Image (cartoon, rainbow, N blue to C red; front, side, top):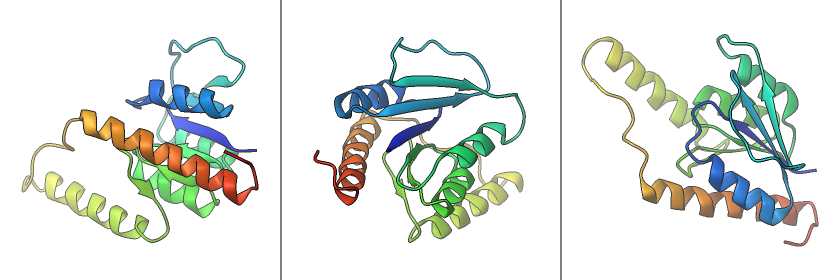
Length: 154
């Protein structure tokens, strides 16, 4: 069954995920280090894991499987989930796949090194309305792709 796993602590598109999942009748699993307010629903589950480096990531990698969708802006987590056969969508609507994850990881590492050396300051650009729109379209396309592959009508 297709489930959506969300790296929920800093996810700016939770409401959009809820709306799309409800439309398709999919289960959403939010994974977080702390409690957060969520709608009461049978299709939504909040998993609270211990605090610590990569605890949320490790839980998601352990539980997400082939044809599940993982929502995260965490590039190393995306890489780990792809290796398990999950589809991965970034918070801004960028799908991660085997063709682009190597380049994305390299760029991330390069920018990290430049920031540490003081050659570059700041982080990613602010989340914009167009990111939200791109995310919604990409999530819908990803769900349709998985459902078609599994022989489920959209």
